Length: 465
Image (cartoon, rainbow, N blue to C red; front, side, top):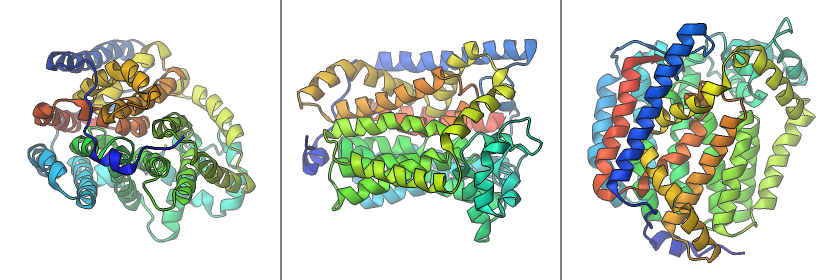
């Protein structure tokens, strides 16, 4: 199978998803808000009754604390600028200027939201608490022996067990901060700068993938929504924004290779595989990005990038295995550790839908409305894809639904109970482009709602991450 010519992808306009109409869009967004409200009410009742949710402001791991801070004026200004000028700039800037502008605007949005809590509380201290990666930097003085014994410290019963986040992730996550420390960028401040800078690039990766898989016009329509992501509240305060960017660039490079919009697609496929491999050693949950990766190949109608991409994944896995770390054994130990801690207390009966409320918060009402359109378009999009007559809107809808499917698998696994406002950032970023399916005339209204949600959450709640 071969991919459509890149020029066709660039010139094609977006095909709007099925289920047109503003009223259904509004109803979908209201339904999302009601889901969050129901999760808040039911969660508060459960938490007050027996404390099994282990979150301060269900369904979010946060506490009620209305406040303003140094980042408040900047965040308000970035939001206003993105709403007023974002759609115009997205349509008029050259492609290279647009990608740089999206990265810069994303960074401004993430930084300003993080600084609402001030430098120390908002950035420097986030990755230094007792559950975080920076607590164990000194234990990686000799990386080889530490990797070989890594699995021995996962379970709580061990006298020197890893903190929760170190035990809950493969060692690639901790090694990132060890290496930053080795080159003189140690401490929470530099760790925060790293996560924000890399995490902010995820929006560009999604933009690049959209242009390759759908068309440039569709990517441009999605650009302002990628910038004003409500998930930015947590991208700037946890390592999951960094994880999300690695996964996003892996998918973007795979999309470029699959559509053959680069000079050396085999080499780009290998690079995508290396990033996919690194993602697997950052977070166990990123294995689910195999679903959108397969979707990319199906949408591009080619399997050519598969071999070099798998080779890249294998190279990363081989390196860690030869260093003495067994990924598969570590995952099984993690499952046991998960149920030794609060994961064993948290009721799946609540979190299986409470997690979805968290997803609504980090993706926003515009995304919920766009997902309605994407979901409605799937049957027709599949028929058109099978007949090789699919349009940009069809491809966007199928890609978004594939990511949603991966997220639902994570939800049903029972290993994502709570804290999904940060854990599911990698998935949420790929659902944001669904807003490109909404009518252009309503774009600023939806952008305003996206920004307002992020500002309200960040100023009314003190988030843990």
